Amino acid sequence: MLALAAGAFCIGMTEFLPMGLLPDIAHSLNASIPATGNLVTVYALGVVIGGPLVVALTIHLPRKATLLGLMGVFVLGNALCALAPNYGMLAAARVFTALSHGSFFGIGAVVALHLAPPGQSSRALALMFTGLTLANVLGVPLGTLLGQLTDWRMPFWTVSACGVLALLAVWRFIPDLSHMPKPDLRGELRAVSRPAVLLAMAITVIGFGGVFTVFTYITPILQDQSGLTPHAVSAMLVALGIAATIGLNIGGKLADWKLMPTIALSLIGMAVMSALFSWTMSATWPALVTVFIWAVASFAVGPGLQTNAMQRAGDSPLMASTVNQSAFNLGNAGGAFLGGAVIHFELGLPAVALAGTAVALCGLALTLYSMRRG
Image (cartoon, rainbow, N blue to C red):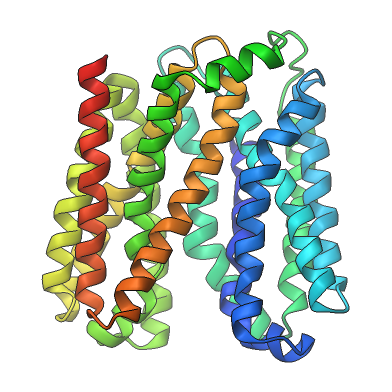
């Protein structure tokens, strides 16, 4: 599980790495800030499209060998990003790197469930996804700091080197998986098209969209509304990483006990704490306490969302697991877009948190509908 988490950390970090380095990359490559921002967008599109495609092409290959190959693509892709002489080559290298993202998480989740002790499947997924969460709340800020102290290429070299370590961890600690059942592509495609699976993915998109509606803009909220200095924001991001890790592990344990009620409870907690945060964000200490609890409640939903999609797919979880990673990315992008629209129309930063509440409630409604359908 730790080997998979290491891979998740590396892959998760590279997705949002350009966000903190936009001015440096734009100046170096003579590109505009909006165009440079699209480096995140093209990566997300690569995840959404590339994940299912790569799984379909590698479905008959051994699982461990596939994981090693995907980490190899990741290492090479980030090295190409660091070497890119112009914007077009950097964008192409980002798309190439993204091919490893959805398929690594999709296959890794199936492997995690296969290796997990009985009754601990969601906890195994929580441990794996801890790497992704830590990448978002710790890895990206550290990568930004490294880029500011050196240049924008150095973080990509560093992530590539971390990918080599993760590859070695997978090679050393993931056991031989040749005894795993061989998936059937037609069966996998039939499973992922079931209404129950599609509903599970819709819950993922909307439910996790509520997280990134707020989290994408947490830095300006804490600086402009809560009065934190940039250094204090960095420290708070570390605290939010701890909160997210706590939430993932609590959510994983509860999801192994009661899956759908755990998803519903997490979404209720997300909605309540987002609404409370819209009120407390203007006072420093109440804001910090509120956002910490919000992070625990919000990230607790992740393991359950992944487990739900895979369980709904029955005996063919591989494609569902991978496509659900695309659903997570669509939720990330949709949440960020909604929060940005709230700011664009000058509704105020407290309204961003209220938008997060609305999205979480929509996810809750879908979850309750799914529970009623059975």
